[in-house]
Length: 123
Image (cartoon, rainbow, N blue to C red; front, side, top):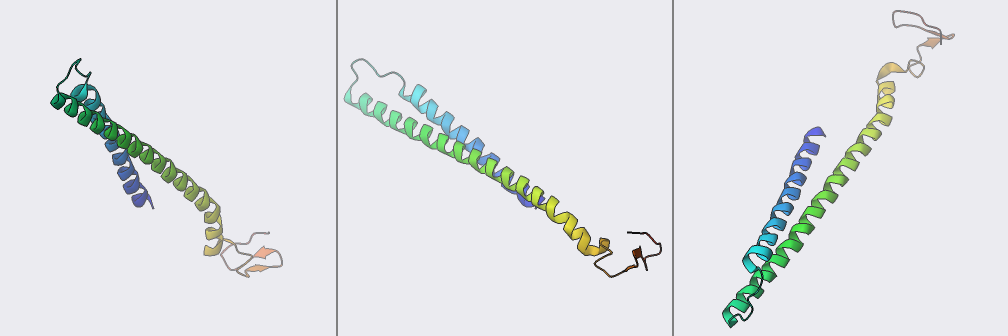
């Protein structure tokens, strides 16, 4: 389970980082490439401005979405891991009992004393 958790955690960290990178590229397109429009641009410059603005807005939206989905996935995997550990903590004592630690269930208690294990103990 630790290996799977680490692999999923690494993938989700990559998703978060890629979301940040996509967001930054969108800001680059929006601020640097498109920039402030000219006062009286030609039709060609106006088209180029609109294209760069569209690319920037799309990349910003998609980068933000990927970042948020990575965060949600990370929170989800950590909650699942904590739930797994809590479940393991509840199941582990039961597993120890079933492995022979509970001497009463094994029938080795005679008259309140534990027998056949090399020592006697009153229960």
